Length: 86
Image 1 (cartoon, helix red, strand yellow):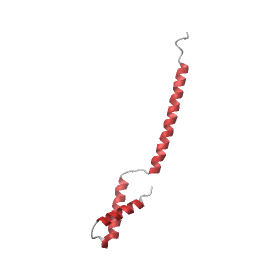
Image 2 (cartoon, rainbow, N blue to C red; image 1 turned 45 degrees about the horizontal axis):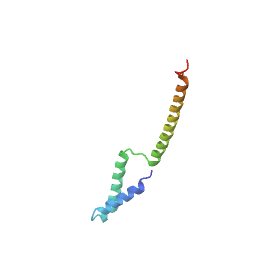
Image 3 (spheres, rainbow, N blue to C red; image 1 turned 180 degrees about the vertical axis):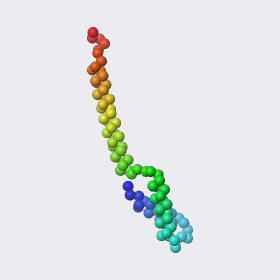
Image 4 (cartoon, rainbow, N blue to C red; image 1 turned 90 degrees about the vertical axis):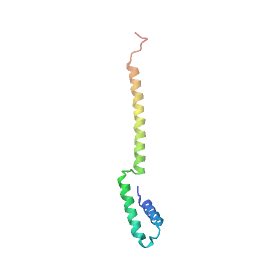
């Protein structure tokens, strides 16, 4: 996930929010961008793509587990002798 456009926009907004900084605008924007990137890197976030991939994998695994549980129930019922016949 590329965060650069969002970081650039947020840094620019922060610079515009600071009054009287037009002379130092570029330097201040770079510092804001570096600070934001540093803090985001420490959050240990995953990309949306990776999250979606893991969610799909979990759904498939859950489906397979439910199918196996159903097969086990059928096999257990088949191996249990009927109480009425003896």
